[in-house]
Amino acid sequence: MAKEKFDRSKPHVNIGTIGHVDHGKTTLTAAITKVLAEQSGGAAFAFDEIDKAPEEKARGITISTAHVEYETGERHYAHVDCPGHADYVKNMITGAAQMDGAILVVSANDGPMPQTREHILLARQVGVPALVVFMNKVDLVDDEELIELVEMEIRELLSEYD
Image (cartoon, rainbow, N blue to C red; front, side, top):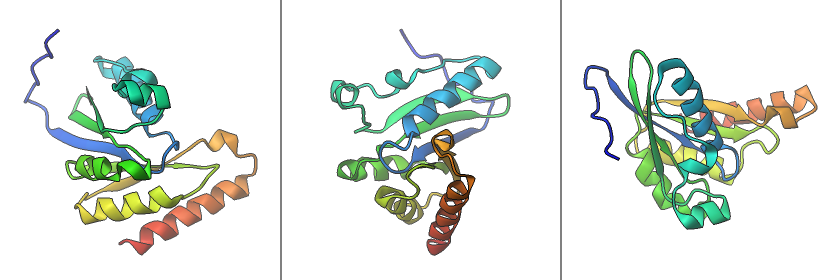
């Protein structure tokens, strides 16, 4: 089945998800496609439809960058879901180099981890101009103070790379 032709009447933005392995980058990507498909039409992708390679499906991790597209009333987005595992950092760099902005996904129950730090540094080095943070898995943390501590750690980490 052929892809629909891209409607060039809307501005195009390349964004992506970056962060440590198992913090929820692919799950967030799937959720974004679901919400926007309900709001604006288009395709929704389930978590297990984003990573395509058999090895990725078998191991439950992203190895190569995965690409999905969606749009709002104002923009068309190409979304790059980057791998978080240290062994595939080269693939993360390739994906981040294409981004106009990145969503840094941080698990609230783990806080910033080694690949969180590395992904921030690499995003800055390849010139990703905008970075937003999505704190994931907040429902797994019982103590509100721990969530605040993780938020402070993330803020501190981001300030180190400004």
